[in-house]
Length: 202
Image (cartoon, rainbow, N blue to C red; front, top):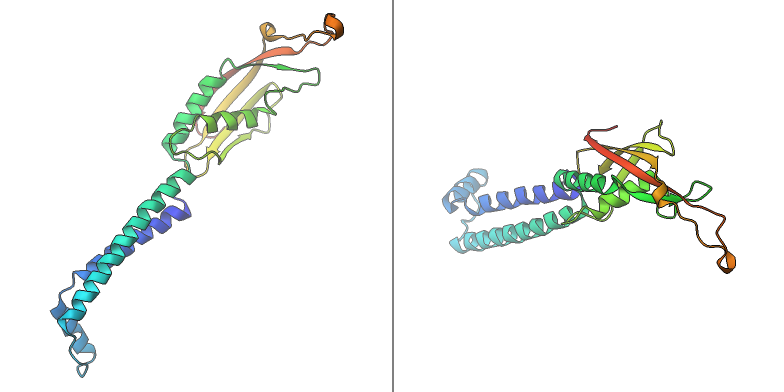
């Protein structure tokens, strides 16, 4: 539970206390007051009416604020269901994902497997899921050809292990034409990803 959600829950509890105070009978308040200070002047009935109206108005305002706060909190953080759906859709989208790499081993489509996974999960968040907060942490044993990424998101308790493995895919090879229409001398090698996911950290 994030800090904003905790504050909203506290506000609702406070509203319940205010409503409880508005329901206390006037005779009970007078008796309690007389027990503490017998010489105090008796409170008029109008004072209780004003106090009840004030307590109810504050409680209504507090409930409205808390409801709006829950909406803001939902848009700022991920829920477990949002993350679960996004991770599985992202994995489906990455399975069979084809791309090319130049002779230095760099791709024009993404920087590394972690950033690619984060971008895909965020894209499939949908609904009220925020556009930030997703983290894909690689394992220490990962290589350029294979990665085990622990995917988490701010606000969500669940974690998922996304396994990506690169395979050669010659159909995606691309050789740009050379100068003056001559055959190109540089070939961008094609690759394809195999993707799988399981619940829990890698």
